[in-house]
Structures are given as structure tokens and as C-alpha cells.
Image (cartoon, rainbow, N blue to C red):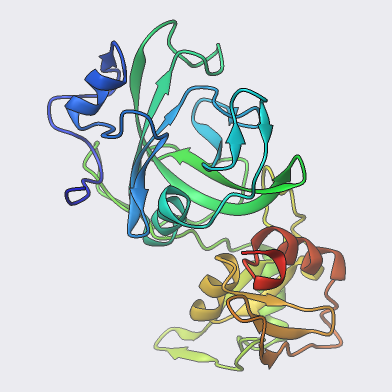
Length: 292
């Protein structure tokens, strides 16, 4: 597979249509003729949405997209766990790196947004979240993609400004700053609850409020102090991507080994609800104990 091309493909603007997968592959907008994800462990550049999985959700400017693997088309059933590799790992990497993903809709998807026939290029999206779930008692991976040029108004978010127009850009991640998060950071004096680091800058100390059960759909976690951690940027990224998780005993564990790497520092003025910790562990921690 040649090097990846993230962003627009010259000659194929938004709304470009294709008769079939062969024509689509020839354009370079989505190169595989069968796979729904064009990507590998280094990132994913495009996806096709065509109703292949029953739990895909299409809201136009937002998608809940199911990863690939383990699906028996004839039985319409998940017969094996999906693996965190290939296109699944690529979409997760695009979330971390902020790579834009080309979204192509094909006939067979949601009638409200899919073309009546063939396939259509519907623009650049960014992967803002990924997690694991179950279907037919088997593990699947799910990804939330949002149109790059849209602001998610249903959440309290702060996004770095970018250049105007349709020039390709990347946004590595969004740091939500809410009044409740500010209160948690004040309680901890901007010290990370995992490593105790307090970052000093010319404008004062810095830390990030990390929601344990994420805000917004599909997680619908509350913006409450009991659902927020005070973390340094490094541990915030590790927590959001499932590289670390918190045990019932408040141990901070490495998902790759399930070994304890630290102890979550607690504060009497900041109680944490175990329900949200359990949710994060179930949906985000890619631990050996969960078959990852």
C-alpha cells in the first residue's frame, strides 16, 4: 500500500459520485475495493458508510461507525471478537493524531443521507472518540466521527482556531473546559491525580479536566465533579485512549499489561463515583483481561 494521503483528493470535490467500488478505488478517494476502512496502524484516511453493520448510526454531520471484523454477512451476526489492528487501529490513531478522514456514503446506508445508488464523497470528518462495546456477546470497536468544518454545539468544548476555508487541517484533540472541571482543578491545585505533576507556565499553573465517562452521545456522561479527574496532558491522553485505567481499588493500571503503575490520588473534597470509573474501564481500557 503506498503512503497515506490525508485530506482532499485533487479533482474530487465534495459531492463527487462514483458508479461502483472499482471507480471509487481508481479515484484514490477510497482505495480498497472491498474494505470499509482504508488504513493501518499508522492511521486511517477514508471510510465507506453503506449500512454494513446494524449498529452504525448516521446523523449527517456526525457518525457512529463500527469497526471491521468478525461479522458473518449471511447470518447477520457477530461471530468473533474484533481485533485492535489494521483499520480499527488506524481510526484510533487518526483520533490521536488528528488526521482528517474522508467519508464516502454508499447506497444501502441511512436513507436520509445515503445516495440512491452508487457512492458519494461527503467530505472530511475527524475521529473524536473511540471505544469498545459488545454485539452478540462479542467485542466490537466503535468510532465517533464529526464533520471537520462543524462545531459540536451540544457539548461544552474549546477548539483551537484554524485557518479559514477548506484547507486541510488537523486537530489533535479537544480539551473541554467547564465550570465543574475548573472546580476540580482548583481542589487539586492543578496537580495530576496520577503523577502529581503541576505544570508551571508564565500564565500560571496548568492541568486538564478529564471526564471519566465522556460527555455527549453516545456515552452521555454527566458534567459533574464526581465524573472528572484532574490530569496532566500526558495522563489525560493516556486515559482517553485507554492506555491506562483505574481499578476498583483506585490503582492506576497499564492496559497493555494490567500491572499497577501508580495510585490515583484522592481528595476528600472531590469524591469520584465508581460507576463512571467502571464505565471507562469497560469501554475504553484495552486490557489483556478483556481479551484485547
